[in-house]
Image (tube, rainbow, N blue to C red; front, side, top):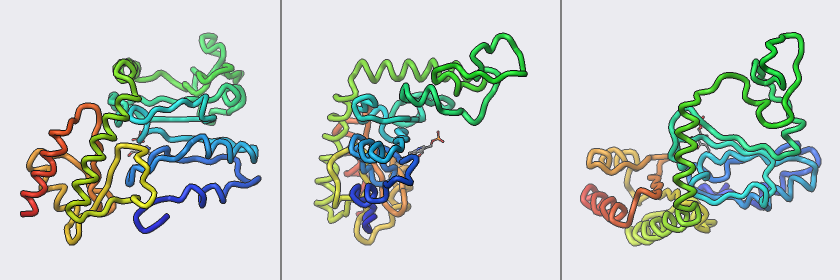
Length: 250
Ligand SMILES: Cc1ncc(COP(=O)(O)O)c(C=O)c1O
């Protein structure tokens, strides 16, 4: 990782060898917004007989993902970030090959093929990912998540991706005009709508708190200001944030 938080994918790939059972990675880095090329990672780990496991919590809903095309073996994502779903629900994808062989580890009465026989003297998993549904779930949350996903799909994740990136492009230009430094910028390829920056001589936590008082919500992460515009934001929001920032810094 360089001092600005960019992880060189080449360095990561160099660590993959025959001793690699699984490469487990966050698709988008929560701090810098760096997005990895999942296809490249999948191909590398598959060459050595391993699997690619992806945490898409910071990407699902903002970055288009096609697990089949990319060759992802397993993927999980929380509902409450870019998927705009409720707390208490999440999604998991397992490739057909993994569904048949992966041991859930944690099991419950619903992990059985014939769960309604209520017998405790056998453990026969279903031949699909439902073997991971150990127990009764928060079904209300799942319905909320399903509606949220439906909504995002109706709008189109491709469109959302482009919309969000147009906002970070404006932000990036304005930050640079103010002498700011964008984290991970050495490798920034516009792979996600998370953008973190710092401003010379300024304390990010103080700015985040000050903006919060003015009704502009962004996060301080690792000494930088993180902005994460999504489908519900527009250019006026970015301009307002910048105006409040300028006023705050006087
Ligand atoms: C990449 C990533 N995965 C997971 C989480 C947290 O997920 P959960 O709250 O569902 O454990 C976060 C939260 O910031 C995250 O950035």
